Image (cartoon, rainbow, N blue to C red; front, side, top):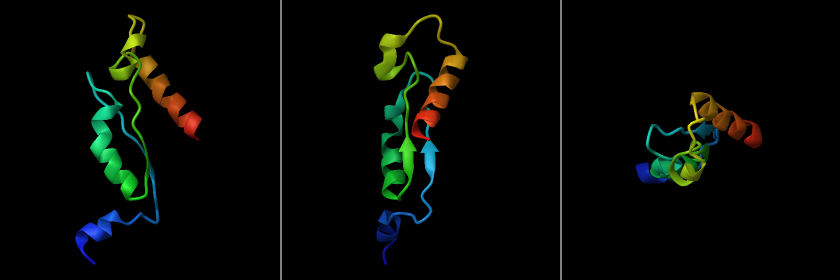
Length: 80
């Protein structure tokens, strides 16, 4: 079996990944990584933080690191 074929097969021990972007990015920056992980049989979430990227309309001065923590916590709770 070729190396490409081996990596394309779903993993039997699929894991769940939450990939969090850095400053001035959005969940979109993980697109290629997420595609590869999903092809390997993993669940992948790439949320965009409040006030950034496609959620820039939610930007206010009230956004702190606590809001970002709440974003990720809410995602984990919603996806169980």
